[in-house]
Image (cartoon, rainbow, N blue to C red; front, side, top):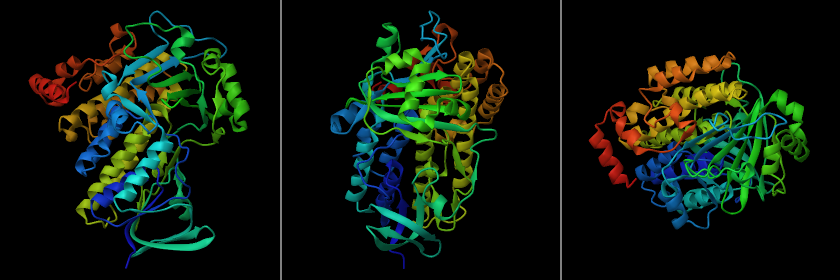
Length: 508
């Protein structure tokens, strides 16, 4: 007989959250961790869809303590001790090597897309050392057995599955009816079972990253003298991106004085900058882009630089007899657009429903088509990011291509909030053939090195554009205007009055 119904490998946010869901379903849960909490981690920036999916889990499984974590205002009131950052949207600045960033009157070298109308309902940056530790404690409070500092050495599928390894120099052995890997790319089961790897999408470029946490990072608005009261939000209160040919830099500010920052670059640029050298390479990155150098003047890295020699990853085996990989362990594309969080939360939703339907015994193959959907969504995210890397040298093309993401994300959020999950049941509207056709066409142009036509994107996105995107009169600044949603009610198969009533109920 199994010792546990479910064993989860890895106690980052995804593993702990799945443990919480499983406990609410009445399953016995073992949560195994190689390290210890609290600990450094990246993957920190949320999005409206991320927070909506977290909210849906909290409501579906009666988890009131998680609800405040779904928006900035409630988080600050309920858990002021947890590190958090305010994310009002996505900010992009385009740079050329050796030249300072100069604001363009027509804003052709910048893009701001608001994700919320004001701070109270805004998205957040998760300070993962605090956030992950909180979720582990919540899982334990609900009865999950948590064991850290475990080095797994063997996995044997069967009835039950067996996990063997060591802890503190002593042999340990656990049995569970089912095992879920939440240890991230190239994680525990990938290594123990030698699972084959595949590119995340055809012709996806090799990419590397170098990152750390910093103190003393200036506001980029101060660097460039941005003081326009008409901007949709303060540009640094966002996921701030510095984009350039071959890669981009992320800057995420937390309210504890720490800023997460790093560079993701194609192999040719990573090798030119010698990213593997760590701190000296970071200085070379800053030297290449004068305004970014000023942005980070006088900063201090508070954790050692981490070099990731290969960002992209996809395992060819999402599940097998007695086990499944969460999307976070199945694959990773890139930090761009924060796609990893919604992909993983969609996977948790699917596994949660399967556990609920089948009494804690996940059949193989999964009737929820876990494998097909997870793989499709990962490939779609990879295709989008691949196209964006190709377009970084032409900011007009990148801006047009990014509208595919922002249109799909805003449409999906509102459809789900209005109770119409069927309209947006997959990431990047994978269940909508018309969107998928336009997506493939425009991404294909970028991958072929051709300019992505803004007018064509605007026409193709019209059936899904409920956020006033692709409007040349807005000159790349997109705030939140709820009247755009009212005007787009029919696209959501609603009446304007029904959408107005919903907005009133939400207090927006």
